Length: 250
Image (tube, rainbow, N blue to C red):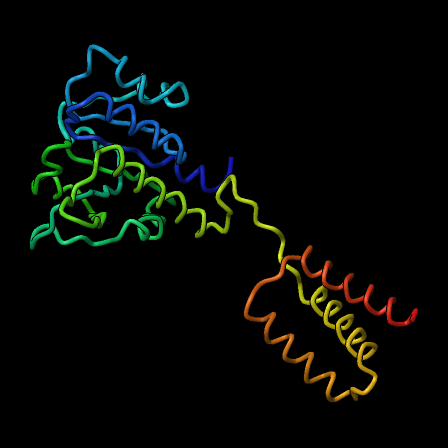
């Protein structure tokens, strides 16, 4: 198990009185996609799980079947050391304390020893002021246009995604599914620049050592503003050697 997944195992999604079972299933699917595997619902258990199971798909069906139902919000949050609430409405009593992209950094100290709940209100009203009092952190997801609120499952997906990405960055791990090549080290770059210097001198016999060093310095400065992978550095080095071989064979 990766360090990021170990942290995500301490995160739970808590839905307060969701109105539509399809949204529960979609929220479960979004949470599962991002490695969050705990789902709590404040409200009465649904007698028909099929609508929720359909939107959850088979990948997240286990979350729907394993939902922990609670009669009160206090009972639902009893096991969590920190509660992160979400709100679409702004006001003096609803001042957001974090942006979605900051969630990972803000909750990481708590995840080291405790559990964290991501709290979402009902689709029509969101979290009430008294429900926000349970929260140690409040997040507002900004939107454009006339509609400030998001679909419940969309809000869950955004917050879970930002949490996963944030924890991955903080733990120095690349998000799964993305290829991050090894960057060229100092020794590899030095070999590449030396090959470029030899090729440059071979191509232009009129250059003296100082002129070659000046051009090479400009090349180093250009490279320093970007990042080269080890494979790219080797490719450039091999190209310079091929140029040098061709020039010397003339």
